[in-house]
Image 1 (cartoon, one colour):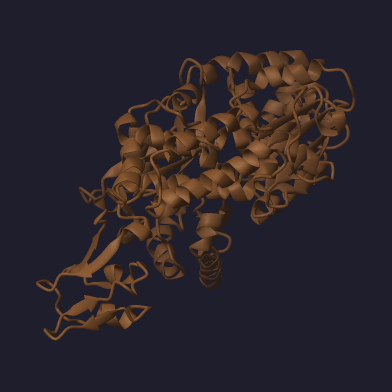
Image 2: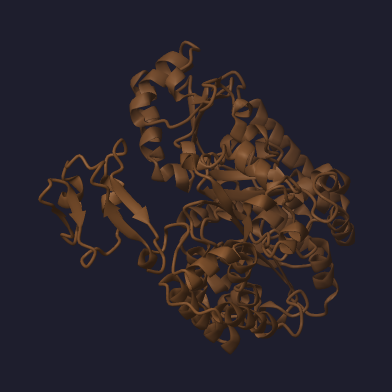
Length: 624
């Protein structure tokens, strides 16, 4: 690769790359993100490669493995350019037909197009699909057009133009002022103003200064940072280099969780290619500015996503939090001024520099600007990554983009902000999604997970699940978090099993208040949100468990009973054959009966009973 020494050389290279690309040439873009790879994308890629070679079409058709475009529910995703025909659920067996009909003849493979589940209307292009139509995809919209392993793809779409603008036309203070005017807030969960953090680090005494990308995304159901780092690592790297220039740093780190091997691979390749192009390392673009980056793989600890814990890990120590008597922007990594932002925050920076702070500020709410990427998961029809303007309501995200609740169930609420977030009830779905409104409801933005909960989910059981997760992930350094979570789990276990006491609610609230006030880091202070929010919004479910020994959602095994309706049972024997405890036997009248002394409430009989019959009755009878 040619090492660039000036802005003119960068512009010439970009023009050269663009000139060699034939916009009319058929291009097959295949999502090769982790989600689609799990659904067989690798075999789809190979099938295209083999069939194109077999038909001697290598010079006529280009195949590109891209990042995740978001619609994970429908993978493997394939887009055929130049028309942009969007195929969903593609398997290797579909490849010959796609090549023969769509690429060679221009016809559509109708069964691979998205169809509206209500009207049956088909969608040919990306923006025709409701999942995409209601989004504002400034960050992840380019994923399907970029091979993350090829820096030229990023350059062809204007990549590193923001860096050139900064290095050749802006002082560090001007960069910080632009970011401050944009009102960009950190997307990692805390929502701290990014420009203020950078300014604090720049003004802080001490050398060297450091910049860090936090890709230790540990929230259950969250994969926003992973998709960006896998699909468009250069956008994150460009933002990181700009941040380094702004604060006067010459050394940076990308901290990636161990469970993201593809993100590590693509980030490492991006760093190497950027160095080869003269966009990273010594004398970047001939400006005399030196900056380089090291990748550090996290050891899998959830708490290491906390800023001081992450810095401890980078220093080779146990990844546990330390007291924040001084901000890390003033005294962070190795006691030096340090800027730490998450992946999405850095990816926004090139957009702000190229489009201007005013453009960024024009999107969103009064105190939460720009777009936000969310992972939309749980009991919703269209799961995946969505990018929307701050301020869109939860209802619009779930119903317009997510396609409503799966299985035609009733919506109970949503859980936002990861395991330290809160559960928001269905009656509050008109809430605009921003930092302040979610906090008002007892939840938080977090890194951006939205878990949709239906009527079959027990609020008590859900709170217990997240408390158990956090109990395992707590570093144990401070007593309020370590012991508070254990005690909360014990109480919730008792309530779930029908052994709860009326005083348990007050005890949970007292523990929560202590943890909020006395925990060392944000994990302990926010770990109480699932408990407090479910008590606040679903108190009646706690009361039912405690006072009636009944689970309204029919979820808690200890409070659920299975029986067989003899008037409906068709004696098919499926339940008896599949019961792991041998608890089902045939009565003298010929229908099945469940021996309650042997039943372990596994629910297999309920699931396997023919849906047209539904002879198995599931109930929570409560106190005898």
